[in-house]
Amino acid sequence: MLGFLRRAVPAEASSQAAGIRQFQCAYHRSNERLSPSRDQEVSYPLNWAIAGRGVIVKDKVFHNVETSELQKGGATYPDCLSGIPLHVRGDVTGGVPDVSKSQFAKLLKLVTFHLSSISCLYVQDGAIGSSAECDAKVRIISDNPSAVMSLSNVLWKIPDRAVSHDTSPLTIYATSSISNNIKTLLGSGTQYANGFAAADIERSSLILCGKAFADSAIVKDALTAITAPILSARGGLPVPGWLMFFGDSIVLLFAPVEIIRSCSEIQKALLSIDCGAVMSSKGPTVLFPNKSRREPKLFSKPSAAIIVSSDSTGAIPPVSKLSPGQAAYHFLAGYHDGKFVPAYNRAPSPADPLALASSLSSNLKEDDTPTYLINAKHSGKYIDGKGFMELLELALSHNLLDIKTEDFRVGELRGKYRSFISSKFGKGLPEEFFF
Image (cartoon, rainbow, N blue to C red; front, side, top):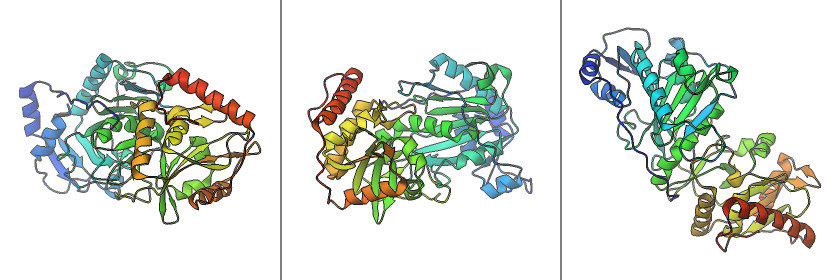
């Protein structure tokens, strides 16, 4: 839908003869206790699948082990980290450091060699997106049960063989034990002391070194970027927004992340507190589950879309109705406290914001979705969660007040919008995009 390029999956292989010898003595055990209790049987399909991702099984694999069993085997939840460096290879917005094709290839070679030397591998499967019709299957390969347990919390549960039947699975390589040559490949200094993350959108691969798996924000940002081309190729429209319950309705919400974080009333209504949703003909889904909601589910189509801006001048009324073109325009601007964040997205993304706004406009028009603009500020102060929910209720009641705003304030803000968008995206906007 957004014209993402479908990625190619290169085969990473070592010496074929040596690989076969190692493969023939590999073991696999699915959903068992981690303490050895009976003879293990070789699982050739799984081991071949792992070998296809560049990792040769040396001894045994623990596949899709339940959390309780991982904990019995010594896995623990680590303290949450933040600020882990993230490098992304691909044409992305978001200002993250780039990684070259040769750098990523060298890093992947070092990581897969390390994982191939480990006696016990932990493999966990899941998905990004809660709809089987439009999701991205994920396979985690790790040397650490704690990493697997932590990472599995950001994935939706899927059937055991779903990854093997998927045409475009992505791979997370999580190596907690890393050598100095891996640590210094992309950079040095204190910011790399706890590890780093490197993502390659073309390869659909994410490498997490050291304790990077404990930085859930970085992990989710990287997975959102990697999965966007896959979800788009499957007919989905990945958008940087939220789905929320309002009564019996589902509402699509676009807002500055600071506003979401500051309002507990909004957070309680969200289907997932993490940013990221996918619109499709089958219905919307969220990318990441809440801890209390692990089973995949397809939701009904949104009854409305809400775009939140924050303007203290009074140029934007508390709540107003938008056409699909106006909605796309305000979404593209991402106006918040005098600043613009295109498409409300600060994370790395392979989607062009203008193409994303155009696709959103088409989606809203096709589904005839009512769209409203809410101003998160009143009299120079942020409205609280209760006030926001009242404005949301007013919008969905279709009984909006006719509020007149002084022309000079509207004109001044309209000029700021026009100046930013024309400088950022040129002057060739669709005619239906306007303030």
